[in-house]
Image (cartoon, rainbow, N blue to C red; front, top):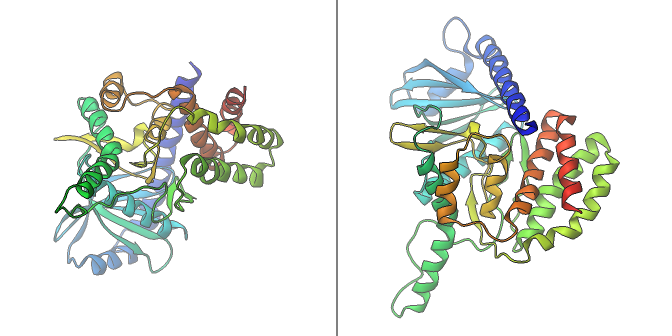
Length: 346
């Protein structure tokens, strides 16, 4: 019951944010006469003589968006006027490019990140006609598993080629990854993630995900109970991975129900915060706020079965997202964060 209520509250919050930013966007960005400064810059950067807003708009609590018709077709433009937007959009573009290279699951094709002349940045990408996920849930589960297995299959193929006389190291455009991290920082929400490469997943997740979020909690709230629990939880985390081998998997990184949809030919995912990590991590936020039905999970686990200790690790992975929401939206997420830490240190 409480999970359902939390989900509804979160959806209401996101809808209110979207309405608010849409109002602000229409007042401050589009203008009522002629092209805005931003639109004039977009024309120059995209090399188009036509830039016509289509009426397709969207967004959430972080950025706003608008679709435009151009000489080269329709594009979707994400807009954020904060100084941190350039780093955020560069990380998102790198994430989309990495997922695209795997040829496993559909994402919007990125076009260009542009630093605005006044303040902030925009991210131009392919416009995709989307609606809520419904008939393609099974296909999404299969394709997400394929995304997570892609690097493992690359590694296995590379190993076979190395053992075959007369074969080279393979010609795939996608590199074989044997560490955890990503080449650039990515943002889950507006907070940057430290994606420096590490060889050990447990160290990466404890230090660069949970530890970082808890340091932000300490800085903003000085929560002594959270810090005390964290001192105990750090010692328990390695035990949760005693019976599993973690192979680096390319992750979407923020796969909640609001970042998935479907188009005419299948599912589509968007707004990624990618890095190479444990495939199970992806399902953490997916299970927090709903939006994924049984057929999705059945299809996914048909290709990647649950390993021993899966449920406890799901709690551990959800902890990151509750902490991240605490740091984004305030103390309403403290209770869930503390509850999970208490449960994990038992």
